Image (spheres, rainbow over the protein chains, first blue to last red):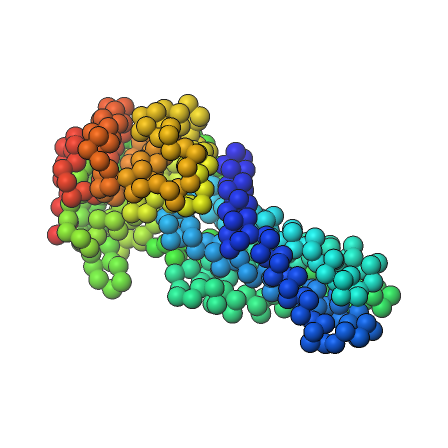
Length: 221
Length: 207
């Protein structure tokens, strides 16, 4: 347990510093979200209709930002060898790395998401649901993204490859979360979308470590 | 092998007819070695002969084309999980973190205790470096940090890849003493070197 806590502390600290850390990620998020009114037009009715959706899709893109370096640095500097030679199964090690990534970037993004949505004109009543969706979605993005990052280890332009691998897998959580937000805004039953999002996040947390560990072993050999 | 905290005892390293292939090229074939507790072996060969690949294969990171690696009575998976240190080309230290942060993390990850780390810091004279960021350290200083990991968490088998290369004369001598102490306590050392390895009783030559 002491090992896992030590690893979580290291991963969070590294993710905090990676690519500028959460400030840059949240800054990118705010910047990208504020482009929407420039493209769609400032008319409040139009903007508020898409506000939650824009905040949600931009979140998925911002989650991609720092994924590239999740395994790459440890792979390049030999730390991944030492992380592998341990009583802790590599699957657990990979899962803890993703959890650190989520704590350092997913959680700050989730706090920014309701603010961005409301600033774009979404109803403040939507804010709690956006926060919950962003927390769950962020978990799914971190774990699915981790699998993409591990698969592109050793490839040139690994970041681009990670995005290409991962973006299709981001589609289901984006659909589920967006569906829940739409339904809630329209006063329709919204729990189904949220449940599907939670199920997707749970599946990602459970399955993606297997893929990450296999991809890391392959890259090391 | 999950979360086994007990360091596994390795009394012997036996390589039998090892063959390793990298990138379509066979690096070596039919390689055998027997190393007992308390013995050090110098691994020699030209650049590219496969010294690093052999060390990684013993650690289970590179697949074998043929042959077998045995760690005495110990189960290979357990032996690799907690019985050996691999000190590779790269030291696995993060430039933006301080020496103290990195050493503390690796000490905890590799299952060492605080007294062991304090002793390692003292032996390798790392005290003045602890609060510096890794990026400020020279190659020799970084290597001393990497070697401190070997001392901070005791593991019987050391697989070292040119451990002495960036060290100055003072720390080469210091490391020779530390290695002698490790061997005296029943440890095993297999080290890829271009210079003589102090205390080595065997030599394995890669053609």
